[in-house]
Amino acid sequence: MLTAVFIPMAFFSGSVGVIYRQFSVTIASAMLLSVLVAVVLTPALCAIMLKPSHDGFISRWLGWFERGLERMTGGYARSVRGLVARPLRMFALFAVLIAAAYGLFTQLPESFLPEEDQGVLMTQITLPAGANAARTQAVIDLVEDYYLTQETDAVQSVFMTLGFGFGGSGENAAMGFVRLKDFDLRADERLSATAVAQRASAHFRQIRDAEVFVLAPPAIQGLGQSSGFSMYLEDTGNRGRDALTDASNALADTAAGNAVIQNIRGNTRTLEAQLKIDVDQEKAGAFGIDVPAINSLITTAFSGANVNDFVYNGEIRPVYVQADAPFRMQPDDINRWYERNDGGEMVSFSAFATTQWVQGSPSLARFNGTAAVSISGSAAPGASSGDAMDEAERLVAELPGGYTASWSGLSYQERLAGSQAMLLYAVSLLVVFLCLAALYESWSIPFSVILAVPVGVFGALLAAWTFDQANDVYFKVGLLTTIGLTAKNAILIVEFARDLMARGRNAVEAVVEAARLRLRPILMTSLAFILGVLPLARATGAGSAAQNAIGIGVMGGMISATVLGVFFVPLLFVSVSWLTGGWSRGGSGRGKNPIKA
Image: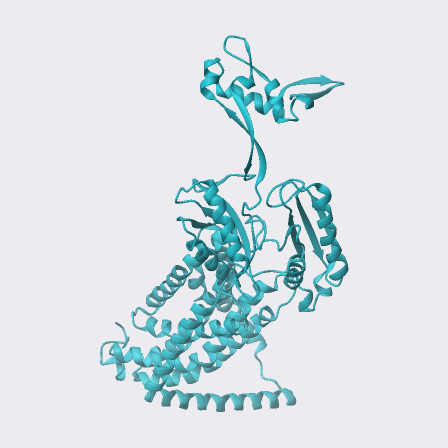
């Protein structure tokens, strides 16, 4: 069943598909190998290892355990007989479990990947446009002093760089990279990366001369520059750049006091002084000068151009052409430039070009062919990335003018994973159903197995909700594992009950006997799997968030599928048998397969 459940995951696309494919290939390969071992090696190992024990203590202990298990099995069989005879209460409880599972699924916060403590934090510093290096360095000293004096228990070293930032380069930008101590030295929750980032963010809000954001690296390298969400505010209403800038600033102001979103950055609140050169194309054309020649001259004069190479002492060195510094320092210097027209005459720039100082954005971005502004942020403490993204969409929808939000990086992958989740569950259940139908040559038996799946799903969702887990990619993998294991437990009972009905038993007698015979293997396999994922559920340190997301969900689902499922599976089997005509002895004489639909 696990192989059937995980095979569809291997065919999903995108970054989500890459993550799913790793689990799919690994688990499917392991299950196929386990089948080979069970068929080939297990009988020989049983003959070698399962021999009578003559040790008095071990024999007494095993005898006590066996007698206790027999008493529990007998009580379980009697309970199953009573529940099958009076099914209304159990069906009412089954309906409550389904409703509770749906409620928990809708209440579970959405996320793409859990926030991992990678032992590194980043700090982005942005001052107003025009701030010089000395002013930026003063803020850098404040940030560095905080990390090295007030976070000494968690911080190992700090590296600060001036002139570079995620929002752009310049004297008013700086970045800091904070290396935390090893995980063994940060066992206290107060020394985790998340706790340090929250305290640092609260402290840096006191700095009035700069915007300081404490960021964590992205969970997947290459998808974004930091954790949190990344989006583009698109001007789909075509209201112009000025209106788009005002809208992004309004969004930042609204989100500043929001309880779900924090660290909004990337908006173009700080405009820069820019020298605008206006070229009168009609005048230039009248002088016999084309626009590309003007653009080439401006580019060469300001930034230089590589025009040739020469050999000097056996080395090839480039030749750059650029206006001399005294002729490109002031706006009026443009009047001292000349451009050659098509007649070979030199024409002064002052004849067709003027200059003026304007305020503008340092960059003009487009997304999906539309004017846009890149905006990043993160979820506030206690909120998931999915909650933050939903809140950001709500704030954008409230902006007047017809602006929309488009996601990028990890946020886009999170939306993609959420849209594929229901399809993934549906395809996995369909594959399980078709495999069971082909195995038993029946359309009714698979229903009694599939109907038991909500019991395990309820346990997984309840465990995730209890331990503050999110509905992320790893939890989805754990949920699929729970579906496969719950179906496997149901098959252990249904298969034996079907064989007993084929020998002439009615559905009630068959399922009670099957439940009594198969309780031991159900408990053994379930306990083995629960204990196997226990280290994942209790993991700490590097990568523990992903391990917890899988372990807690699978552990809760298996406990529910074992404690509750063993009572619901017999009832569901009898109900499906009755609906398909397999209630009576021998299946009403319709052949060896009494519940064949």
